Image (tube, rainbow, N blue to C red; front, side, top):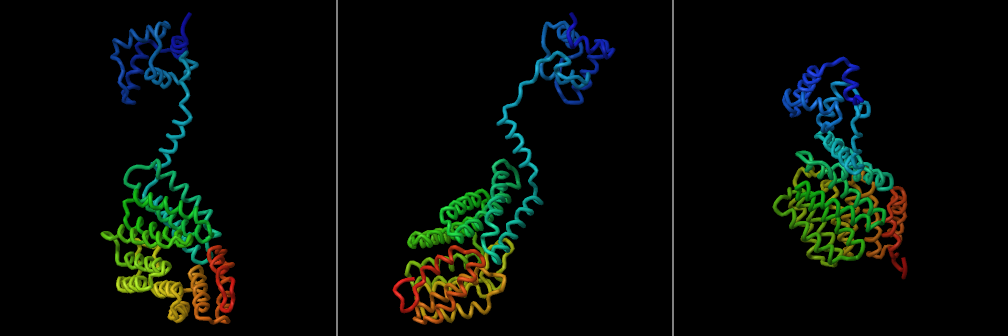
Length: 374
């Protein structure tokens, strides 16, 4: 009986010599090493007589020159690839498509989320941001090459923003995990600036848990991380963040010195395209100092915060909410019940507008002058 391989050759009208010539030319086109024509003559005879099965290289060549399937040529079916290996191949192939333009698209999405967050709070953006973080993280796992650090930088920025949003939703555990991912991504991006920023922001989770000593230590560490690579803007921001933690821990003189340092370091043009997440110019540093003065019960906090409020750009609704909460606390410390109530009511409206659980919780803890409970 003729084998399927021999039957197909005869149906196509090829001689043995023609098949050998076709095999040789196709192998050369595919850069596949095969036997010389003399050896192929012997092999073709053995293959067609069923005495030997062609290797996968020759099966591929026969499929291509004859235009037939394995079944039609009498070859065994190819084993199916392990599904896990198939999925890995797919993920690697997708990750290899990430180029500079793709990274910029992701970066613009993070910046858009940051702008929306300033105006409308975390409620509308946190889930969207989580989806983007998962997408970028998956690509980063399987991406090597020159775009990997840039992609990691985007992941660090997105995760840090998600950490702040989760904290605003009173989810400290989620916030902590987002900051941990941000720090890991910053390491992969080889960016001391991103690492210091994520480390510093994570300290505010500790503040919300009343772990003030740990928060101070973490800010000290963050400033150390950025010591050799920080721009004046980042150094000023880190000093101010340190000042807030020091104020929360009751270290009044150290807190004031930290804010003085921040003022001295703040550049005349406090905008850095490489650090689009830092806002310290205009009224931002002043409102931050006012927050810390309010924490310390300093009567100067009222004037500082009131002045900052008049200069705060309208788009910073989240910042305005925090500032008005601070004013409520500052007036409470000064014993002015009416002013405390006025600012507390305004703050509640703003906190409800942006769905800030964190600021609502701060307001719930506010003790009115003359009261014994919140």
